[in-house]
Length: 252
Image (tube, rainbow, N blue to C red; front, side, top):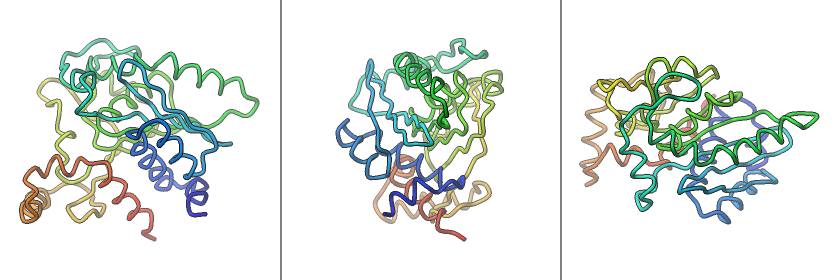
């Protein structure tokens, strides 16, 4: 019953929680991902894989979701995509990270089929896009090709240049968890920029207006006390985002 209530929660934070869970499920093998979506209340789901890139598509009576899978260190295609720091021309204009764009290109024809099917329905479903890490970058690029109702990204790297960023027209919640190292790359001095309304979680997993040096420092210190010496990598984990947004959704 709890999963059904989550699907029916139409508040923005409620939708962000759906996005976070779908982004986490996108890392699962196909059968497991589809089963997890059904437990959430989605009667139909499919995990599409092309050239190493993957997107989890889930839909119910009202909504059509695209959750892009993030980096899998064991997949050479993902690692190669992350390392391509060259900016290429984006379909919507401006310059974008070439590796991230290549991943979207691999999947785009399959995504278009779902979007075209939706456009032919008498009552069209609302389209949402989301993703974590590399998947967050992919979702951001996809949102410039087909504007969703909302875009939710978790631990997103910088995706493109200023002109590209201006072409993202949909509402965008960009979540950052404390010292998440991926949110700091590629470096701004190479011309890459972030987009979206940032929601920052401090070292306690609570929402905070913006990062402070004190919170970032003690976030690292607390991790070291627990013998976790790579705080920026630990903070990047998708389970941390799901936990923090679940906590936020319960705040009245």
